[in-house]
Image (cartoon, rainbow, N blue to C red; front, top):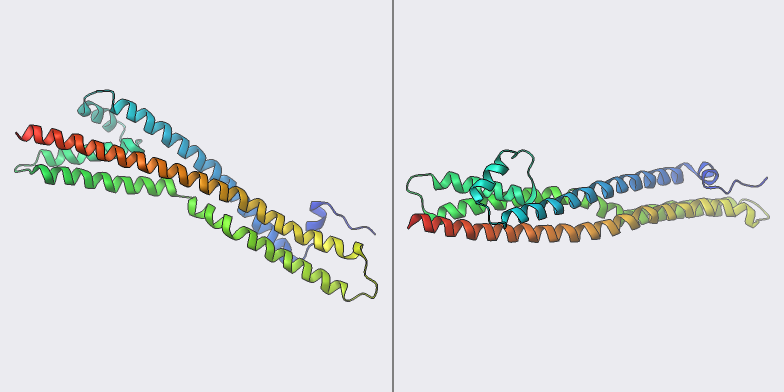
Length: 227
């Protein structure tokens, strides 16, 4: 009888441990692609939202008017717009306090924006550690399944007097599938992690630049009003 050399046939013939490894790698691959699609959509939306807000921010409109427009939908804003909203909100609150000091007002607004920036970055970076983990451990999990499968094939080969290639080929083939699945899960995860990390870094730099430029505008405004 000839062994079934199809993927499904090799999977069904594999040992319980190798099957477990294959199913684990399949699950990791599915989870990885889910993260890739969701992170790609979120980062694209974040870049478009930042560009749209910066166009409005630098259009010359009154910042108080822009703040009121943002405040009307404060529950849905994020990214650079959220940093602007929280900074202006804190600035307005401190600016109305009696005996205010320009430096303390600006520092309070800047601190509020830094906290918001940190939360926004946590959101942007969510999922990246999982991609990094999948990319780093998947090949080793697949290699473990391969080693185990080949070891079992050679143990079975040693129990017969006349060994043939047809006897050992299915076992080696099913073992090598585990390595292939490990690479299939790891390569997209590593590529996506590197790409998303670069995009997150660019967004963070843009957020920081916006925060510092807005702080300078608030400082000039506070000093002008205090004169």
